[in-house]
Length: 224
Image (tube, rainbow, N blue to C red; front, side):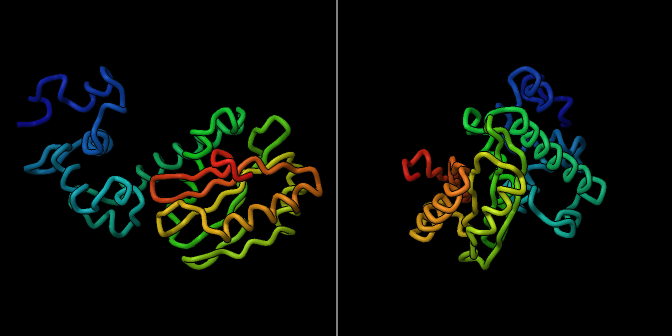
């Protein structure tokens, strides 16, 4: 039985149109991306098989070209298509931050930072540089380190903020361990950067730590 033979409200495309994309399972969303199945498997069946192989939708989306293309039913054309979809998603989030206030759209800000930082296997420290209306001017990855830590230099952060003529910044870094809980070193560098940027009248609005599927906000914790 093919997907066309399924009841209309069980077909992924019809279900999306009727109930919205959020109503679909990972396999159903992936099936829409795949469009067709392979011999003996519908698109949904192939999607389920791929999710079992990779372990999760995220692992599939973040897989490299070789691992992706080695799977039955996939190939270079699908890999290129997937990279285009991911890039469009990232650009959409970025354009939202360029137009609006990052503080009033905190969810999009966190999404964008997760998208940019979560996949790194080593620790990366970055900054969102903002104008006087808290719209994004630029996102810069400034420092990277080992899987455990990154060396962060306040002078370099201040220099880059001045180059961008920023009025405020949001600090961000990832924890490759997947656990977003801030360390004492995270608290210390936050205060050092806040003091350094205060000297040139640039506000630190937040420091966001990106873990595996979660983020921690210093502002929300009352730690700024």
